[in-house]
Image 1 (spheres, rainbow, N blue to C red):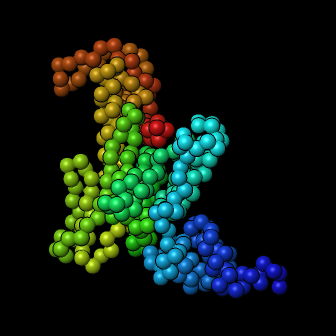
Image 2 (image 1 turned 30 degrees about the vertical axis):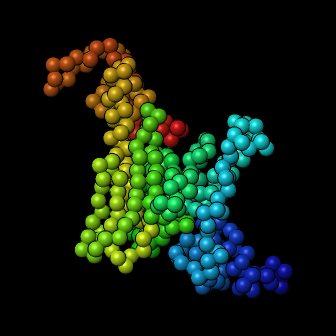
Image 3 (image 1 turned 30 degrees about the horizontal axis):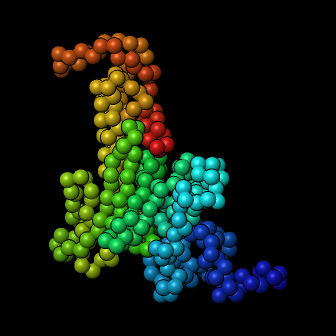
Length: 310
């Protein structure tokens, strides 16, 4: 028997070695062989490391808030601020942070389209003393759309993955910002709280559109992946509405700017200057320079890309 095979044939060594790998790798390792699948399924540690279960009795294995590697700042003298080396270093720190502290489904979609400059886009320690781990995350529209599509394909299996924590360590609140085409954006907060049994499941919304998830007295008090993904439709609609408002305001500033937001009534206009008459209003918009014709889907894609580069 080869030395490698001999090591992996010992369950305790197999568990310790595999547990050092990223969550999705552990999940994929179940396809190596039936033996590996059985060993991973039977290991509480590997099930926890792969985000296939929440709890694990050995608390030394839990991810702690101080496990975070600080993201690169101007104080770091190892690399000139703004250099390619600094950018590369900071991206590696970002990947390490999100891989360790966010659910693998979110991480996998982040990895499909990494931000050009991830610095300060993930701060899970923000307001930790008050709300627990979770903090702040820039929820780029390209990620919002990817998760929206993922949920549509996988919501039939929500009973399997939906109860898993959104963050590690577990969090009762998160504050995510979704940028738009006008360099601003919308704020999106999720918070869980215990209520009487009769009010459980009746989520509420505050004046800012933030969601309060009401859970029964016996339910775990932390955000789950399902808590987020079930509200992606609402968040997507809010972002689209924000994009339309951005475009509407561009008319007040400088005419029709197709680079800002999602056009509505001028979607089918030509690329020449022309007058436009509102049917329902005695108002004329003169001298508007329209962009080239695009479908609604093409405009949405352009808005997603523009806002995601912020």
